Image (cartoon, rainbow, N blue to C red; front, side, top):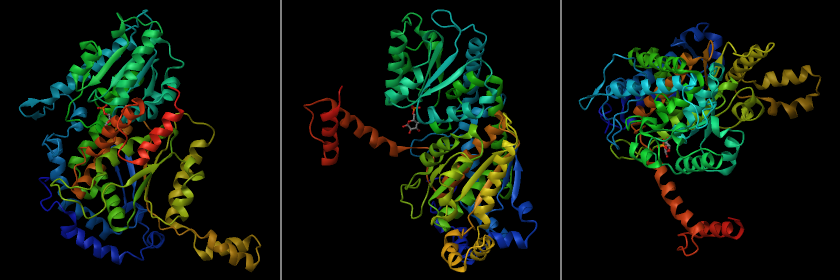
Amino acid sequence: MNNYNKTNDVTALPAWRKLLDHRESMKNFSMRDAFRDDSKRFQDFSLAGCGLFLDYSKNLITHETRSLLVNLAREAGVEQAAHAMFSGEKINCSEGRPVLHTALRRPVGEPLMVDGRNLMRDVHGALAQMTDVVSRIHSHLWRGYNDKVITDVVNIGIGGSFLGPELVSEALAPFARHGVRCHYLANIDGNEFREVTADLNVETTLFIISSKTFGTLETLKNAQACRSWYLAKGGTEEKLYRHFIAVTSNRQAALDFGIREANIFPMWDWVGGRYSLWSAIGLPIALAIGIANFKELLSGAYAMDQHFLNEPLEQNLPVLLAALGVWYHNFWDAQSYAFLPYDHNLRNFVKHLQQMDMESNGKSVRHDGSSVSYTTGPVIWGGVGCNGQHAYHQLLHQGTPLIPADFIVPVVSHNPVADHQEWLYANCLSQSQALMRGKNRAEAEAELRAKGLSSNEIERLAPHKVIPGNRPSNTVALEIINPHSLGALIALYEHKVFVQGVIWGVNSFDQWGVELGKELGNSVYSRLTRYDAEPADDSSTQGLIDFFRGRHRG
Ligand SMILES: O=P(O)(O)OC[C@H]1O[C@H](O)[C@H](O)[C@@H](O)[C@@H]1O
């Protein structure tokens, strides 16, 4: 039971009931009319903070909606929950752990006592260890077994030990000027292994085994394969320590794998995998962009932390985004949410957000073990614009489901080409404008008439040309993607997810749902590889095992 939402059932809160009534009153609300009737709408429903600018005016909301949604967040205990999280309360109830990824970006000097221990000493100790190894590699003091300079880093990790670092490395590629290329090896798939290692030089490659538990199948199998690759390519056992680093909370397992003590970077159980890029899991980022830029990333996230903690709910970026998501999800029956970054370097942002959001709030049991009676975490999807306009925006504009969208767009490109950035920005705005205003029947007919079509043709075609509109979106604009603004942007969504979890009364920080598949995987594997194994419990699994056996050339 969380300490701040006594009922734990959000539908019992007065604000929820008022929102149900309000939803009824909004059934004929038209954004297009709202913009026509209120010239101050953009001004009233936009907010700047931490280098980001949020335009949330293209939403199915009025001033009353906003105050009811903010009241819901308040009644659900969001303010108390935020302080509980930041102060180290064990809010991850099922695992009895604090949730302190925010501690990873606190500046030196701000102590954080948890169970009598100042965690900040551990945090800054790890940051100092990162700083040292980055400095030694960038200054060519750290060399390979043949004394060659390190030019490539392969991060071996999956889930939170991969998606966050991958996102940040790509997003901050313009800042990678230290001669170290980052590669990510995540899946247990020979195709990926070959793709990652094909062009690597064993003499100049450093492997980072990133695994909070050091027990993840994919990561351990890849670590063993990379070790074999290193030895097969000429690497020596004696100098293996120059090519293998580990980031983990399971120190003993790393030592047992053969990682030298000094090459082990700490992780802690109070940092969830999907929130861990700010820790030594972010080592590949720091190797690519330098420790100074990595610290800028931390300071951007810290700025958003302070905004989230201190701004009133009405002026609070994560709270507003969270409340709007709840509004559509629980009162407009939206089942998914689209993220549409208009920047090539943010092309994998949605992958990180998928884990952050869906692994956090893809829950159906509240803190106290009771089942929810309402929908919780949405399906998160999306992709880079303008590409999506030529793929799935059709459904966004004329499909049957309501799918709220977040557009994310920088003004300045790191690589300006002709007027491309102007067109990219224009397309981002026009897509959200089209979602909002649509094209009504009269406009469709007038357009066809202007093309000289006959009235029969107009009658036939017009229904297909109508675009419903009134489809909500937010636009997060920023001047340029840099370490500070990216840190703030990622932290914005971390806190949005947190606020929604508080409102829904679920534990956003465990992930028991991923265990069963892993357990069953072990028994399927043994049936695939041992001919004396018991048959599977169901004919589908056994039939597919037989299909494999009949064809596999192992
Ligand atoms: O970092 P690791 O312990 O290897 O875990 C890697 C990933 O696998 C787990 O199954 C969880 O679903 C993720 O939250 C985690 O990030």
